[in-house]
Length: 337
Image (cartoon, rainbow, N blue to C red; front, side, top):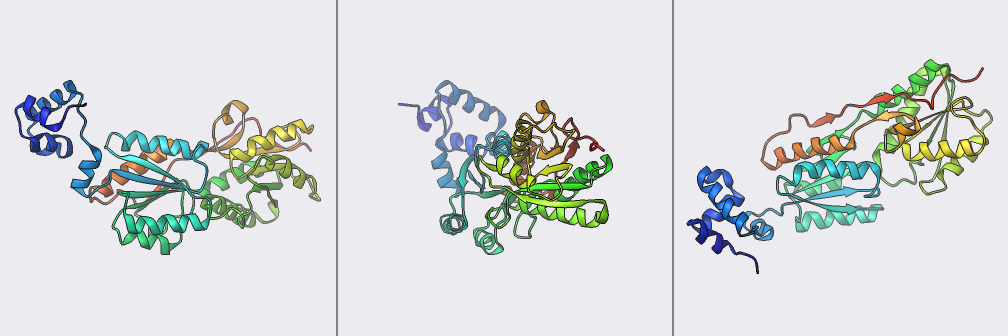
């Protein structure tokens, strides 16, 4: 049986209230007293009950991490690691919630507004309706978006500039001499409520439209399952004019398509240039031209903003645009004449 708070108080020669304040309100305890209590607690292997502390403070010490994707994906896992690097030391646990459809998302926000079993909610990579965000507003807890559209209902958002990033890729390809450019992505009508996919597709249409006759754009929709590369390649082959360059909505699409093309006899980039988004695992080693972003730093930035909000402070910026750049590698080159 572990040591109790009474054991720590007796050994340190202080009251139980002082021991409690040492862990929950350390700034209210004299430094020498705090040091003595912590030393005794360490010697006795004592840890304060987080649930008891939460009950007393009215806080859960829990942050809800809500994603419409897979929790083991490159992006979400790195965001989560960045969040945890800050929130863990601040005494917060992260509760993971993966929602696959509108019904699950609606149920989450309905339950959260009633139970208030988290001190804040992080929405990662997808958009939520204003009506659901308003439900959380009644609880007074912060709502932060990571890689989401910065709607007014969010307390703060962190992400990259999707339009600027798409412009970097397209301008790079056009400057190389490419005119027939295809964009491979999920169909926005079937990808539920993910926001970044829609934003990138809209940016592709918008930038190509601005370039006018300089480009002949094509959009190819491919499913998210393991058939996506073969499916995309078959759709590209059916086009009247095969593109000289292909942009994929992320590296999760670009890397399998790259291998599939090579397996089918294409030489990259002589026959076709390929570019992606994210600069995920293996992109550098394989030589994929892609947009670099750092979801780990995004998570850290979101966590620091969240701690300010939980302390009642305003964030330095409500909309934080994180650094990103085009990493030009060996999968893009001028088209063969």
